[in-house]
Amino acid sequence: MPAITFGGVGSGIDTESIITGLLSASRGPLTRVQEQASQTQSAISSMSEIGNLLSKFKDAVNALDTIQEVGSFSAASDAKAVVATANGSAQPGSFKVTVSQLASAYKSYSDSLGITTPTQALNQAGSLTLAVGDKSVNLNIAATDTIDQVMTKINSSGLRVSASSFFDGSQYRLQLRGLDTGAENNVTVTENGTTFGFNKAANVKSTGKDALLKIDDFDVSSKTNQVTGAIGGVTLALTEVTTAPATVTISSDSAGFQTKLKTLVDSYNAVVNRIHTDAGFGATKASNPQLSGDSVLRGITGRLSSALTQTVGTGKFQTLRSIGLELNNNGTLKLNSTALEAALAADPEAVTRVLAGDDKNVKGLADNLATLATDLLSAKGSVQARKDGLAARQKALTDRADVEQKRLDRMEETLRKQFTQMDQEVSAARAQGNSLGG
Image (cartoon, rainbow, N blue to C red; front, side, top):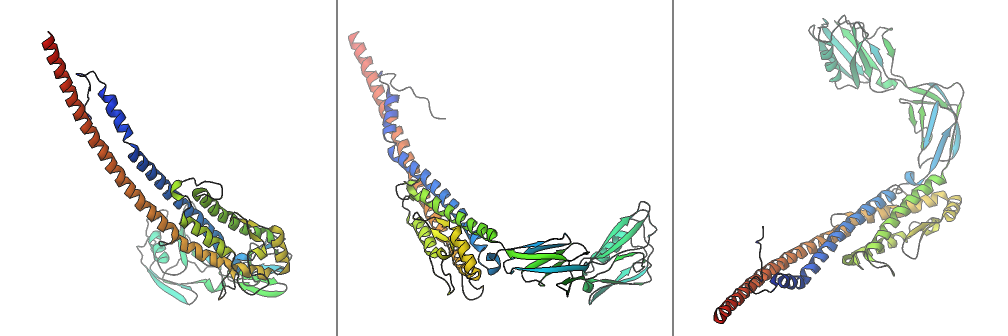
């Protein structure tokens, strides 16, 4: 706790006010350094936010850097038995789908095990052989094994099978099921000495079967109820056997594609607008003097706009502007829906290739933008390098502030000594004068 002083008692001069005033007048360098340090910390936070916005932009372009992602198609079915979805590699068309059998997994129960608590021994001695496809295991069952111990042996067999217990209110049974649907994943059980009864017809609730369907009268089978590959770019989710053919229709979804492009535009503009706010743009002053006209931030917007205006490929459309993505005078991006619709109507494949290339040797503009965003956000990229530079500046400013504060502390100490000495001398002189005068 600082010492309590009463300056000027002897002299009658308000030395405390004088000291405070002198210190206040000398605080200018410290105040400026502290203000710069605060601005620098704010600039570091701004760079972090710009990095976050760039990351969102990267996500947006990554959603458009493959042919499958760029292509937008919708699939619809007129029957709940067949649910259809489409990805970017689909093509418009219509198909009749008839489902005669759903894919199923093996499931069976044991006979009643004659126990009323799971800790009782099952009195089953022998071996239980389980086979799934071309893989099989032989499990040794001891007479002292409980239901939990048998389940553990089955569940630890390494096969795609699972065992659980079932209690009907009076006695326990074992449930044995395959974890995958399809005929190739059917489970075969062989008992030697044990009498669980998994193979009894009454106990077998389902076997591994393939889904069977016709698509435009062509036979199709699938080991799951998610049928892929039969119709290019389309997944058929089968939910029940049909009583009449379901009609599946695939059509272009330009609205869905525009939504993806709108996300790209919005995320790009968020980056540019934040940089303009922080560094200043045109008549708008920088919100932070430490970033005013910052060359790194200008470099980021320059590299982004340059990447947006590149020419790619040799198709009908080779630039983003040719498919409706246009740069404004302030560096932001806008989506011209009319131009996009016209490009999609003229050559949708060429529109796709502008963004995604050919997924092999030719890069699209989304690929290039994703690469640029990755570079800007890397450990040695522009964003991190600027943050590191600002952090170093902040440390230097903090050190300078410490030096300035120590200077003021020394100044205060010196002033107090000087005014204390003056006070004492004046007090002594007055005392001597009073003595002589008396």
